[in-house]
Amino acid sequence: MSFDQLQLDPYFLAKIYTQPIIPGKSTPVAAEQKPLPKVKFLGENQKNIVLVIQNESGAYLNDELFNLLTNILNACKLGMQDVALVNIAGFPASPLTAWQQAVSMKQCVVFGISPASLGLEPLPAYQIHSAGGVQLLFSDPLELIAADKVLKGKLWNGLKQLFL
Image (cartoon, rainbow, N blue to C red):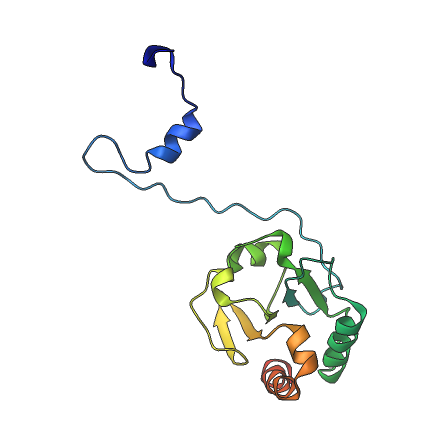
C-alpha cells in the first residue's frame, strides 16, 4: 500500500494536530456550554434548596445515609418537600451554571464534591460562599460525616448560618 492510497479519519487528524499547521494567528473557539439533559432529583424543591451528592453505586443514598440526611433536614426545620437531592454521578465536570439552569436553586449544600468539579475556585469547606446568586456550603461526604462527630458539628454550624 502506498501513501497515495492512505486515508485518515478527520477525527484522528484533529487529535494529531492540536496546534495550527500553518503559522499565524489562531482564534480560539469559545467552548459552548451544553445544557444538562433533564435532571432527576429526589424531593419537591419547594424552597429552591439543592443538596448535591455523587454516588456512583446507586440512584441516591442508602437507607442509613438517607436517614442521616432526613435527620439533618429536620434539625434545620426542613423536609424532603423543601429540597432537591441531586446525584451528579451521571454528569461529570458540569459547572455550577449548568446546574442552575437544570435545577432551580437559591441555596446549595454540596456533599463530598470539590468546588473545582463545579467550575469554581478552591473554597474552604463548612463556610458559606456565594457564586452566581447561590449560597453554597461545601462539606465532606455523608459517609464521613456519619462516622465523625466533629464533622457533624462543623456541618451543623454551617447549616445554621445557611438556613437558620
